[in-house]
Amino acid sequence: MTLHRFPKAFLFTVALGTCSTLAMAQPATKPLPPGSPTTEQMEAQASLLARDAIIRGLAYLGNPELPLDPDALLIHAYLKDRFGLPELCAEKQGLAAIRKEPGGTLYKFLRITDTLSFRPDFLKMQGQGFDNITLAGMWYDKLEKPSVLTDRINASVLEDTYVATHSLWAVAMARQCFGANVDTLLEYRLVEKVKERMDQIDPRWGDEGVEALAMLQYNDSAYVPPYKYIQDLAGVQNPNGSWSVIPGQDVDGSQHTTVLALWALLQYKPLAWPTRPRNMVVR
Image (cartoon, rainbow, N blue to C red; front, side, top):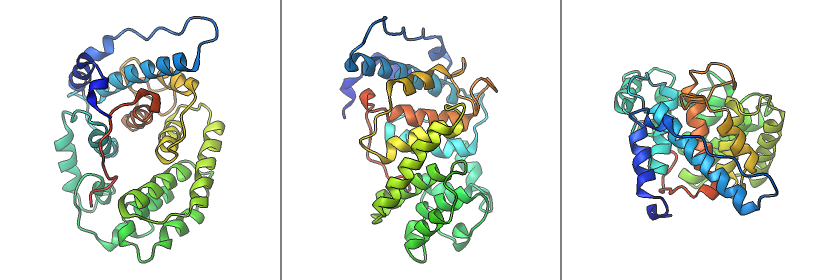
């Protein structure tokens, strides 16, 4: 996909928005007129909603006065390279702070952005169960045996918050970065579980639901979210361009939820945002 599909003024707005709040002033996209719009009209409207929400979300994260959440920063670093996003104003300082703490909880996840020397303790069962699954995918080439990843997934309760979505993320990393021969039945089961979880979550477009929408599009190349999903997700964006862990609460927003919302919107296929080849971990 080439950049000429997007007007130069739009690309300039994206770059400018990451270090200012000018993008916040954009008027909301007008809804479709009453009637029975065609599929093409619905996709075009959803693409406009996604584009505008992305610009406002980037402006929020790019505010130089916003202290960066290290967890969100790591995910943004991947999105930045894959989708050609501008660097956040405090990105380098944030990553440097994680590097300075080799014993910190996020240090072992730096493989998303850096070439990192492996330590056996990275793969010890510790902390949240979904983190142990994620690390097995991120360090798949260092597992004692390939089945460790599937063993950790099968031993987990997929109904628990974030377990199914992180399992999909781990499966994607193992296949994309290390050529893993992942059990397709397991992946299908995970996709169906994430869809099921999305239907169960109330309200849907909180942190877990947004992550589900991002992972479904990443793992299932044929999946295109319904127009209403994009409409609803853009509709719960806060005035400052962020998204909240629970919509309607904490209007200052969550950087983690915001970067997941950007991931979900950037992958919306009718939008056709240009992508660049990028492994999910640095090899």
